[in-house]
Image 1 (spheres, chains in turn brown, yellow):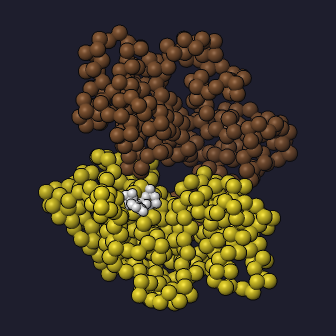
Image 2 (cartoon, rainbow over the protein chains, first blue to last red):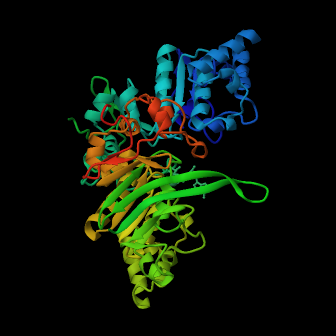
Image 3 (cartoon, chains in turn cyan, purple):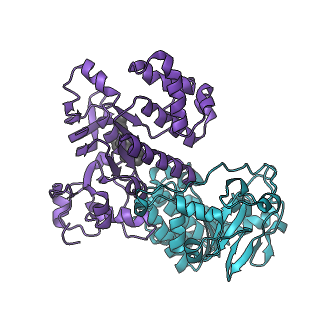
Length: 275
Length: 314
Ligand SMILES: Nc1ncnc2c1ncn2[C@@H]1O[C@H](COP(=O)(O)OP(=O)(O)OP(=O)(O)O)[C@@H](O)[C@H]1O
Ligand SMILES: [Mg+2]
């Protein structure tokens, strides 16, 4: 949801960014017109979404879809566009690019569609790539291929990536910084090693302890009790208070701020674990 | 042995000629054997389409295998009389992959749970309502839920209802087909805890099917790794995960730990199975022999098995 609202892809109403600002290269994105937005999405900010097959247009061959993007945002000739697409599709590991270009999304597997999406996302050389659960819908072995590709491409093309996922293990292996969200708020933020080895917020601790692992065999998994209050419920105090094992009176009354505990490591909690 | 699946193959016809004769087949399960002892948890892992659900359905008698046999308590379920089968049927239950589709939307939860008691003639009818409420309590639902319909529950709760329905039969074994895959991390943890308690305190055995190696590894004592309908590796969970021998198991394990691994190619199409070892087109170590001939599943006396020509070299 965060990525979609940053990208102005949620209908406004009902969704609207009501508070705060998003800056991109120092520009306040909240002040941009819809046409200025069009100029950013694609050439400067690329996107890869969860469902590769539904993010592509089902009735247009994939080559034409990439052509469209390049025609809108670059001044390349048709011949140049064609050879650029062939090299992009090759780069994302698709065999026989000229044939793939003529195919419709349904003729490709989920993993192949996601490769096409990645090629399309980096086609105009953006500075930022937003990847929203890009591998969740794919098979395990395909997931690793796509992750590998995504991070290789971002290195080669020198892209920054906002990678949104529920899979904590992927995050640990690849991210420079991690933010843990609970009910639309960042509850903890920092370097992956700090967060995974010394989680400060009880929600982060709970998430990590709830993951089944071979090494945990025979032990009960930690279980975050209670249910998530809906985002529409008016909340007093900390959003996690009703499920928190460390909850105190103060947590139900006041909103904790995102405090820096050690350098670069922040948590939104009155009683961080301080380990 | 409580459950013994012996060299079963299950073939589906996927295309028919104009005259209705099958012209193309998928071997969803290809020569698989599994034993599950009383109170044991045996895991099955593998990618989408490798035949896990089909195997589970054969084990529980919902599909008749094309070849091979399934034994319950030592009895060949295709050879015993219907009456005999009916009497042991309740001891072998299944919780289905899709908790939404497996519950009748027009039946109240109380009726869904009472039905198996009636079918199998368990308990006096006056005691059934109380037992149903106890069941709900055991799976972490409320006694008041008996009057609700399936749509009034979340995915995790419906998964628990499926489990309560299986437990109502007081089974010896439950086939659990991806019981936690659709659940978020904290609900998943509570369902896994529940399963583990039921196994420890009531000795219910599981055939636990999942594509997630960490989940299977967490719960099971033994496991099987399947690829394209075949078992490629099997053994004690600790041995297999501590020292995986098949290249595919290595890939699955590294992926489940969030490590980057090299694997080529797309998941295979079961309707066009490759020659030789089913994994060879994607295997980094494949050589000429792997393309031609499949190494049969080799095993030692501890039940450790692997199907790879190069198992001792990698
Ligand atoms: N009733 C059927 N008719 C025809 N083909 C089938 C049938 N059931 C399964 N198949 C095919 O058999 C193969 C194995 O399917 P199965 O559902 O057992 O796999 P699975 O390992 O459970 O996959 P998943 O992880 O996606 O649940 C697939 O290719 C599938 O398309
Ligand atoms: Mg299945």
